[in-house]
Length: 331
Image (cartoon, rainbow, N blue to C red; front, side):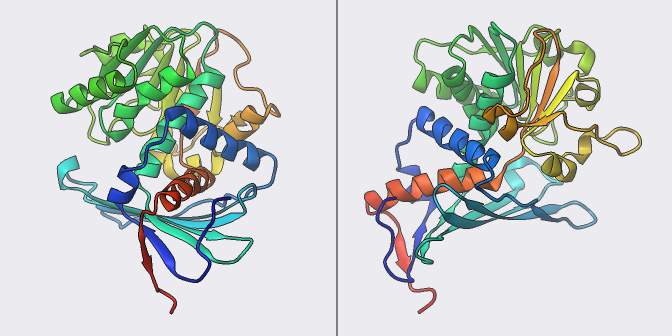
């Protein structure tokens, strides 16, 4: 481990501090995958998240506690979004991650977790695609152009370099342009095809990653997916039928899906059982894809152990660079 604070002062890492840290997509993928493997080995703890949401649904708050057994770090993540009944520009979102060294008992850092989440989530989608896409997958479609949509394709290409045709669909021109810029910044020789008919494009895709916001008009149905397709749900853009009619269902966490995936429930308010959880698939203790032609639905919900691992990696890089502000919170 990198040298960490030797007293009880807390190092606070702001949005600006973390924005200046250079980290490769490969580094992010490796860090996130390692967190899953540690969890699968029984060395980490990832309890189900707590949720608070008012009756009118205008906001939602989450609290997540976890422990990384490899890094021996304990952390608490909080997330609060206000304005769910409004457009994206009118919403407020705050998320923090506080890390503690479980060897020394001292605080490591408290940081804005937005960049951590913006990298962790598309990294998980890419790992899901790497493990669950049909052999020879060549075409990917991303639904949505928000933060997750903009980083989805660079991570997918990093994890699955054999992808040849890359498509994106969305309703925001600026977002579509941002998706193209993000990919070109990392893969100058790759192009993104902007498609207006998401349902038709989904029928041609081997991998569909749905990252759109709750106001999206897109809801691809199961009968639009080709045999062997992998559909990954991050936000919105897939209809419940893609889950209920899938040949196989994989979730990063079944418990998390049962908390945050209720919008995919059937008419009776039920969700189907999960065939396997992704950490076990990565570890080889549970099968992922069992047939080239089966249609797989994968539910990508954030596990705090991945935030801890990536947050700790950022904390190491930040401390090495002398970034952050020390606060005598407990003095």
